[in-house]
Image 1 (cartoon, rainbow over the protein chains, first blue to last red):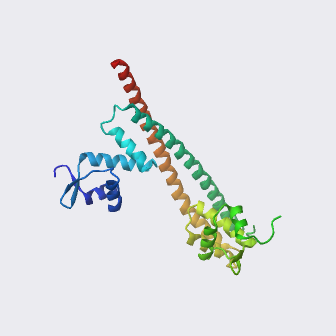
Image 2: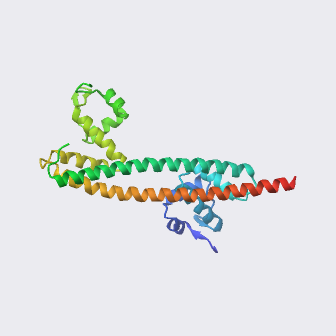
Image 3: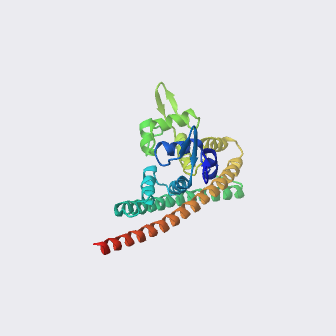
Amino acid sequence: MKNCISFKQMCEKFGCTARTLRHYEEIELLFPQKEGRSRWYCRREIARMKLIMRGRRFGFSLEGIRQWLLMYDGEKNNLDQINTWIEMATNQIEELKAKRITLDQSINELKSLRDYSIKSLEEGNPSL
Amino acid sequence: MTSYYMNIREMCEEFNVTPRTLRFYEAKELIFPIRTGQRRSYTHQDRGRLKLILQGKRFGFSLEDIRQLLNLYNLGDQRYTQYLQTIEKSKERLNAMISQRDELSEAIEDLKAHLIQGEHELKKLKKKRILET
């Protein structure tokens, strides 16, 4: 098929496992064309997969990603859809920021542990 | 002051963990409560170790790493090896956490850009609606 790639190529392109790709199909995020037992992914599916991967990186749930895909999927004129997405994205930004704060705390804590260990080692007479 | 021994319930309350977690750490030989039949008594040392285990988990250390680090305490070298290993492992995890943080920041910025785009589209759409009516 012209401009289409196989299941295996799709996995390679996006660095995902076969299991993941099949799962996305099962939950109807992707709709590859089937030819006998083989599946083909064409422009639309590749574009959708790009969005899915990006959504995962943003930490969206698969259901959230479905909403996002709907928005991109010829539903551009749907006000509700865009509103839903904006709300979702706003919440997600807050969640990611909270995650970053927690991570910063752990980083600082670990830095203290490292520095304490270095100091104890240098002093050669470690005692708590 | 708390008593020297704590039972499993007191431990769970103190450290905000489940009994299952405590039993798991025991099975992995990370803590060594005194067993009297089915009852477990946790010593001061267990509490100290658990505190370090939970801290290590936050840092993303594997349980095996944590176990090894904890066991170096009793090596009898004034904790020299323990400090050395801790520094080594800390550096590894710090690098990983810092790149994780960079990825997170990147995702936040990316998402913000998408959000602005979405808001822009919403505005356009609303304008269009008004013109149509």
